[in-house]
Length: 438
Image (cartoon, rainbow, N blue to C red; front, side, top):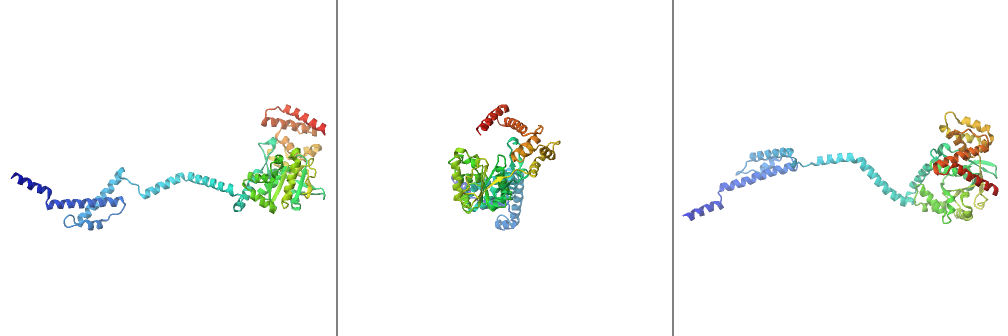
């Protein structure tokens, strides 16, 4: 009997009643309805009551109304749970977009500057390699012009290094004399008449400043010739291994036009370069003969190129007579040019000094006025009058003495430890030796 009882109990355990099976099935349906409600909330969908009610209603478990109530109740409950629980919070796409926008606004200046810097680096890398090509030729020429305008915008004065003059204000147009026709003209006017000229003058007559002003004029767009000016500083030919082509390419490179060799060669052939050979007298006497032949050969190789060669009058011995058309002499400043030059000093003059007063003083001292026709000596006169308390000299000897004292003292202060008196003694002995050898 005991065994029969155990068997009956076992059957009830392994084979539940129909009612129990129905309850299990309804619980499963209920769980699915709850799961569907959670899924819809997580995916940010709206309530789908009608769809869920039809899908899960049955005669045995839940009617459509019961399914709808269960679904909607759980849907709302789950939303409230998400709002109150940080663990279940998940950022929506809108929140992510808002955060990204706020971050961008905070970092936009940094991002822009970083992008600009990167583009400049990349653009600079491209420009450094392709500036001389036809692709970037116009852009490179504009860069060259801008660099020239900046390089030569200031007139640097050795003894007044902290206060340079403005080229636009301080440069007075210089004239040259064609002695064959007894005619004075501006340099650009001479360049329209003659393709190849030598310009000679005394020390301080403004030969180098003339070249710099031509370059500045081209940079500022007031150059009225179709050619492109480029400077060749002839003292660089003191190195016998240096070629003129190298100097031209280097000069373009110094003015923000890198890798210009092909451009230079092409424009030398077509005559679009205006060559400014400055400072023939600055070539050492030991190197001058070789450098002269190098310059002449270069001119003959590229006959279409316009050029100016500058030199001190005392040095030039018609070495280029076979390759140039004219030798022109620098003309001294007129009284009108002296006044025009002094205008650039007006703002620096003390209240008790004026340009009119200085002009009257110069006219009362004819020997000093004669010296003022030289641009370099006029610069020293303007400096002594404007920047120092010294009384104006009456004679040339007194002028030279005061100018030497001031310049040696200033140079001593700015550049080395040697006493001005010691330097004056050395210069006296040197001057005596030069005069004795003359």
